[in-house]
Image (cartoon, rainbow, N blue to C red; front, side):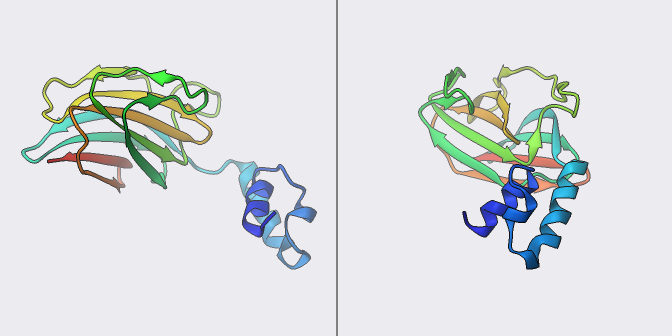
Length: 170
């Protein structure tokens, strides 16, 4: 295993610290392990909002906690659940999957922090036909966006309050 993978697994508590890194780096790896045991901060999804502007449709994911990174986006002909790979049905012709890492939609007790609708049509938007909460799986949250056709996408984050903004452009 390479050093990055060993440190990652050590941070998760899956590899003993002595095996995770050479003796010179054991101190920093042990500090990482104790930080992980204390519970690293992850963003918690609270709300999904939509809005229309002259040149784009906007989807905003409201989070509580630190700004989640990285964010992945992929256009495709279908949407799929992260764990099972089963189809996720949403209204539209082309679909954008947005996966936000280091984020969850539940608290430490396993109770949901996102209580909004799982799927919603967006008749007031021009480019986006529907938005859906796909899943909260393995340290990330995925949402799906159904559109008439594939378009340019701009994704950025804001803080105070923490938000991920997705613009579907002309």
